[in-house]
Amino acid sequence: MKQVPRIHIVGRKNAGKTTLVCDLVAELTRQGFRVATIKHTHHHHELDTPGKDSHKHRESGAAGVGILSSQMTAAFVPVQRDEDEAVRYARFNVMFNDCDLILVEGDLHTTAQKLEVWRPIVGEDPYASADDRGIAAVISDDTVGVSCDVLQRSNVQAVAAYVMQLAAECSN
Image (cartoon, rainbow, N blue to C red; front, side, top):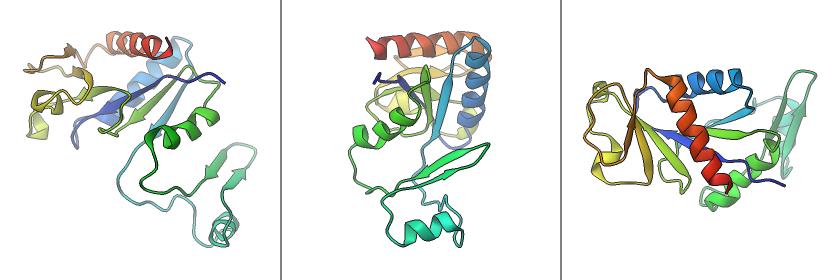
């Protein structure tokens, strides 16, 4: 099975991560790429609906629960909080193996390639200015004092090309 390249879009709260991920998905899809996304969060969210059959299956001890309908497939797999990064993301590699790229919104502590979205409105310096943190580039339409690459947020085509360049490097 191929390893699907995974690129993370990181940034502070309200920096525009979700908007950029959506813009990149639209642009890359327009170019003919198959893109999957993952939203990374530190908050606990009950993704399954309590009281529904699938939730009852999981509560009774199922190691994993799947939902299959005519329009959507979902899997709920309980994990340990301290699981290794490679193990956590390997599950998605299996599910998204027919894709050209996985874009992850968040997960600043990943070892995978990261791009940081930054706007002055966030009120703090970019993560990339404090220390490298493995950030390949900062995406902003404002002047940013960082040592990594800076891409114009308003040029989604250029950002998409950079993402696919990073993805190609991940594949090699």
